[in-house]
Length: 272
Ligand SMILES: Nc1ncnc2c1ncn2[C@@H]1O[C@H](COP(=O)(O)OP(=O)(O)OP(=O)(O)O)[C@@H](O)[C@H]1O
Ligand SMILES: [Mg+2]
Figure 1 (cartoon, rainbow, N blue to C red):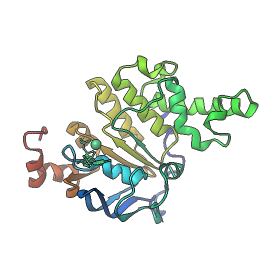
Figure 2 (figure 1 turned 180 degrees about the vertical axis):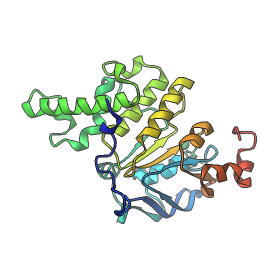
Figure 3 (figure 1 turned 90 degrees about the horizontal axis):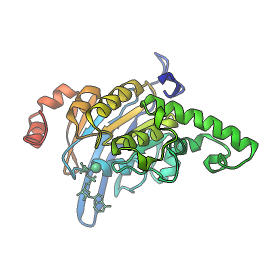
């Protein structure tokens, strides 16, 4: 199956307005007296893969939670293009194509791999995901279309042979890839991946790296939180470094690698 089949449908032609970026202005988050995000200004551009890195507890997942609406920031605003997202629920943001994968795998154990991935397509179907399981004509048609979409996403990640397995029967690394397949199945406009390589073995990480590179498209905002520096350095066009809820550095991978503040943060904990 061609990768083009899961790339965003409308690719921005050269010379027209660029696709929308996901931006945050002064995004702040606090729990009790603890400032987890201290007024971040971020721009995640379409057509680029941005790496979001930083030590444990830096605020990476918290920023994703603010972007997706899981957390309500205590300050600042978030926009997709010119549209403010503040006040929209995670489901409403998902309907706008803003999807994420979770740091901890969250698949439904009673559904097959293909059915789990079909859940990522629910917003595209009038009758809804649940009706695809009812013995109605429209439900059957929708189920068939959703199955095609799920298989396309699984094939992109080399997972087509796992389609009828149950998640619990698969190694943890494969389950994580299934979750990424679910995130990409609905052809998102913003794809936020939280540690996609965690728990993957070397071969799976290589497969994931290739898949993420191929997934990059002019219309797609892709942000990857990841501790695997080889993966980050090899796929990211731009990297933002967080520490204690503030941005330490932001720029091209080479500049980030040479940045003395970044080197200090990572000294002895990362491979550069
Ligand atoms: N719901 C919450 N309640 C209280 N504190 C929280 C909550 N969510 C996050 N935090 C705190 O916010 C800080 C940032 O956590 P976060 O999970 O965003 O870090 P991270 O950069 O994703 O780290 P890791 O690399 O370990 O996943 C931590 O100190 C964490 O304890
Ligand atoms: Mg995290």
